[in-house]
Image 1 (tube, helix red, strand yellow):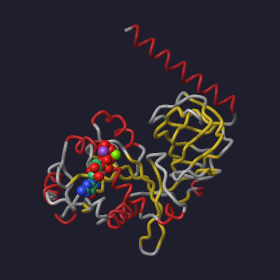
Image 2 (cartoon, protein in one colour):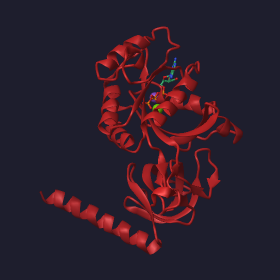
Image 3 (tube, helix red, strand yellow):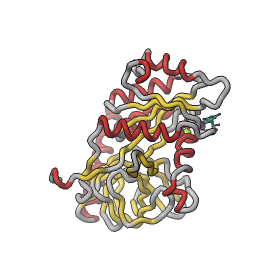
Image 4 (cartoon, rainbow, N blue to C red):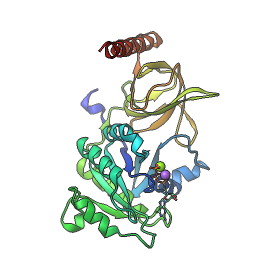
Amino acid sequence: GDEEDLEARPAVVTVMGHVDHGKTKLLDAIRRSNVVAGEAGGITQTIGAYQVSTEVDDVERRITFIDTPGHEAFTAMRARGAKSTDIAILVVAADDGVMPQTIEALNHALAADVPVVVAVNKIDKETADPSKVRGQLTEYGLVPEEYGGETMFVDVSAVSRQGLDELLEAVVLTADAALDLRANPTMDAQGVAIEAHLDKGRGPVATVLVQRGTLKVGDSIVAGPAHGRVRALVNDIGEHVPEAPPSMPVQVLGLTSVPGAGDSFLVVADDRTARQIADQREARKRAAAQAAGAR
Ligand code: GTP
Ligand code: NA
Ligand code: MG
């Protein structure tokens, strides 16, 4: 796309950290305080990615959040999450401190050259020791601003809701200081599948993050080895929407099979082209599998 077609887009923020350190609960707390979601009446848990609005300096800012599991089995998902994000929030429970998946998540973020904001969670707990967390992460190169470093640490509690505004502010400050958040909304959409599954009633359902362009109902798309025509788009609060602009997470209905988490997607000219590309990808996958089997 042309340089002049670039428009501001929301930051994409991936929430990472050790299992049970409170990533989902924290996002849930952030989402509940969100006026936009509240106005729509009730929040659905359909996808692990959503947008919230926050006001910083009287300016409304939207932020896209992606939740990731902390369980050690999900290493690949964290690696992919780090790649498709602008900012990582590293959640560390203040009672537990730094744990193996904290470090693993941090390493994925650093490898992807993604700025990190640390959310020191569960500070409502009596055993919480937020300064210990700061000390531990300093050893891994994340030096808190208050120690003369460059990393923002924010003490939060998903339970008492303390620190949530400060956390959102830290995200916005990081975006403004470090990132050029623009994308061309006019081109055919491209992005990445975050999650996908087969729904009994609706068929293959893929949650995708639009990274460039605008995805529209009726578009012919290829997602990994899957293809199809977009029958419906469902946003993070369960509403059907006609289109999804850059940085918007949305559920796509109409694929003929289920893509993999982390697969890229793109809009193509027509159904025939989509099927051809999908067939080629499928054939390449089979050939690679055969070659691996022959070794
Ligand atoms: P995985 O997705 O399994 O990696 O876990 P998670 O990081 O998403 O943690 P989750 O949000 O599921 O929270 C784990 C447990 O910690 C739950 O029992 C939460 O209620 C609890 N929890 C989360 N945040 C807080 C907090 O700020 N304070 C307290 N006291 N408990 C919390
Ligand atoms: Na959990
Ligand atoms: Mg979780």
